[in-house]
Length: 218
Image (cartoon, rainbow, N blue to C red; front, side, top):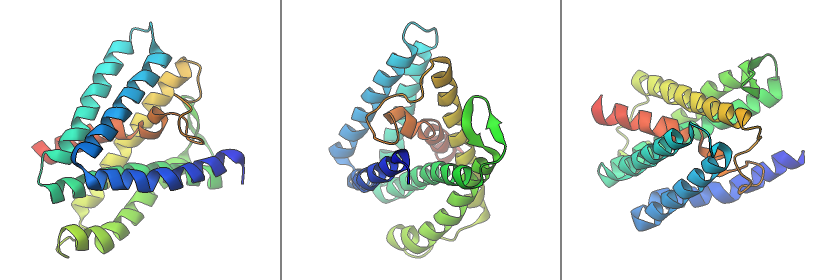
């Protein structure tokens, strides 16, 4: 096991349970958490895009995205908000993990020059892992905890996973593009093995506003 992968695993073991707790707890604790993530993200974006013409649009987008994070968590009843928030976050996380694992294991043709580590196999994994694991989690955990066994994993949820995963992957590529033209590998070093906050939430900041729009208006 190389050092990067070891650091990534250890960081995830610490961060994942803490994040789940903060999301579940809600209230001012979660508000403080997303506010902290917002300011760190803006700081990282500022470092990589200062004096560039896309600096201000990026800050505006980050602000818009984090407002949608707040709305998704608090703009519905507590149980529904929690259910929806976990759904989109877990989809994005499994999308990222699936892409990383399949890319490392199967390698193969590169996806794009924007992000040299992205492969076609990784894209396939980014779809397969959330489809299978969210099916498991939502039928065996979330359905019991939130919806009293009434939840059924239907085709509309399958399509929603595909859409959220696609937007998450596009978001990843967009941030990778800006990192590439800024000549940096990571947006920061705050999370060992992962990089900065933006490196970790690059897909979510695009997927969550998209998901909230679908749930709220469609």
